[in-house]
Length: 188
Image (tube, rainbow, N blue to C red; front, side, top):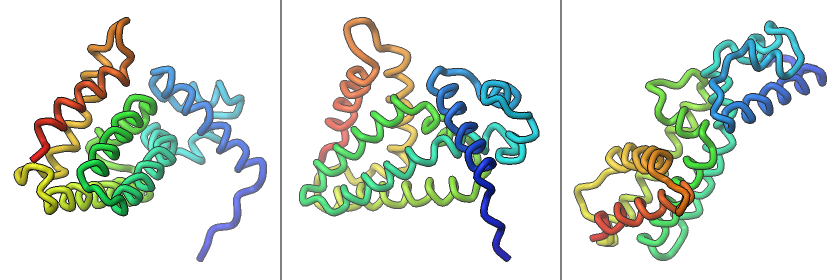
């Protein structure tokens, strides 16, 4: 049995909830469903009807970013030079982590609450693993590194860039400098 299509007003409210949640995440404000409801101007029950937990809302906010990274990984797998494809993918990933805080929050969470998020993260990890394997097969990356190694390193780079950027460098510039160090260590 399929569910009935969402009423237009319900769909509009859902989108407004996601938009406000994105603003809060971008501001660094923790997602509290009551605060979201107040800012959107709807009842708390409306927010809970769409998103039963703050984690479900956060995952919904992160979904477009995950989808964009999947598309970038798919393109990287078609590029001729495996090393440049991997390096460019990691650069785009770092930029996404530094500009969309929902991605880091969702990727660092111990579990996913939405099946769609589980599907997206599994697809992204699979593609990134294939990209790394392709680069290793080409002899361009050291053989001991796996995607399971790189994933926490990428999170660490984003964290370090957030903590150590100063007035002379943006977070992205700092992160790219750190990524360059990591890439030099990876290159076979």
